[in-house]
Image 1 (cartoon, rainbow, N blue to C red):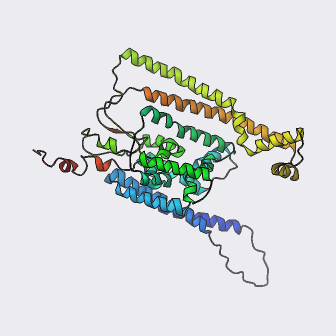
Image 2: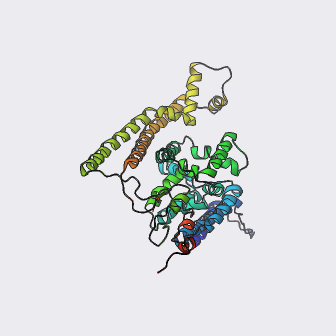
Image 3: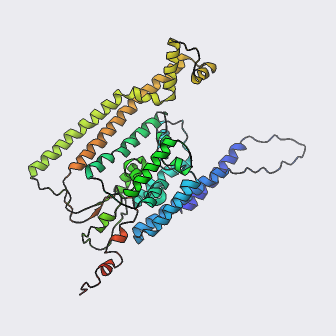
Length: 430
């Protein structure tokens, strides 16, 4: 059904393009001349983008089938290989779902920005699958996650406080990416992508080295980019937490053997009796009240701090930088003006118009920085509350927000496919 819809959208796109190029009627001559049929070739890039979308959907369907229905890892490995080869090296990692966050944010904030349909689909399809089946996009369809998955050999664990602190970075990164996108300042996700240089076999040497360091780290611990940097993974974790169909380690009762916990590369399987602390009812009530007091304070503090630095953050906007250069030049004319100043004066720019644009940008940064600060305070507050929550678990449970559906745990569970008989062949079956 989805493929049919995609084909229909493609046909509509072609028809709209043809109609746009022939929107004026031909002149009516009486010479009897017959106009030839005109055909318009579709650009190869348009075709490849729709191939990307179809393959993206197909691979996510296979991943969902593998982890929810079959509970097996083998298809995930092949999906990872295909994703790295096609979306990574062949398509150079672009268009990617991670970067589409910025396009969608800008489209929501600015009605004049036209969001391309393929970019919208790259953003919305993994979100939809996360809501239905969990983070199957992260399983191996995302080339960034797939590349880290293929090089992972060991799983050295970090402490829970360290993991919690590092886990705030994707949310803060997401907030700043949206802030700079809606203010038309920069697409920082694309600008600081650590793997694009690897996939394109060239680029900024600093980012390439950073990507190589992440891959080296991924050998010894599961997916450091996905867990501690990726803003899109943070977004998908919200929907995966409430997914309709959830991943299950086994259909049989858990025997608390700990094998799945040790096998999980991203530490997304919580052990039983973790954080088991006995407290009185009065202590519990006090703790909850303190949460309700601290969280609003952190939100207000974050909003105030970000609002106060909004003017400094606005320097990332090219119009703000140009305004500062022009004002500086007017106050102290330079013998050799910069290229930007030459372009500004050469095109007949006026200080009045530039000042109006500058003030609008500052007003926008003041508003969006305040909202961004409130969200950052909320993230920090929720993280601290999560570290102090006291909860008793009686068996191993999957953390659906952190689970990337890699399928490693399935092969380690002795309850799957009769593995108890393999591990304990002399076990009395009576």
